[in-house]
Length: 243
Image 1: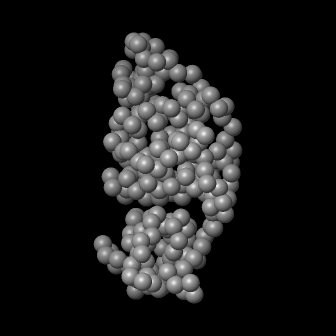
Image 2 (image 1 turned 30 degrees about the vertical axis):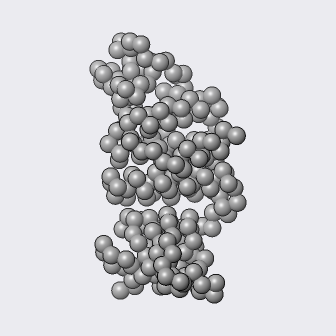
């Protein structure tokens, strides 16, 4: 039975001389494999629609827990800005790799919406570092290492929050403070905003470099210590943006 699904191509793998298999993160079924017969051929109608990082609607013969087969597809957004910028491509590569790992832990539909909306906001020209950090923070819950950003992680106090500490699992109030590193009060405020913001509703991102860099530093350290994820694409991205 022919079925239309919305999705984003994470990976393409050659199959035989003229065909390929694409791994597509779909809204309806999570991450699925689709056989694309003849799609490597220059004159094949599905050649363009089966390239990595394509966001489209795919008409497929769907088979649950098996390879589906592609009939046709239509691009939703060509992502021209991202595809013409090596830095943005590097951010997207990392987000795809990270999302692939998150999907191994959970197949919640929220993951799809947050990923797609992050990519679309990046395409509009919004700050890719801030968008990446927002998605990273939201993904922590699905990875089982979420932070307490509503109250002190030690006593539950919702007032007088003094800092945030990864080892303690979130915010620390002034009463529970010992020798934790003190962060800027704006970092405390922005982290909570990152976590609760609806990515689709973001229209601008005006965050000072020192604040966004401190948030990025904290999340990098937290991911390294507590998620168990070591992605080469993240190392490449770090090296690229540090140039």
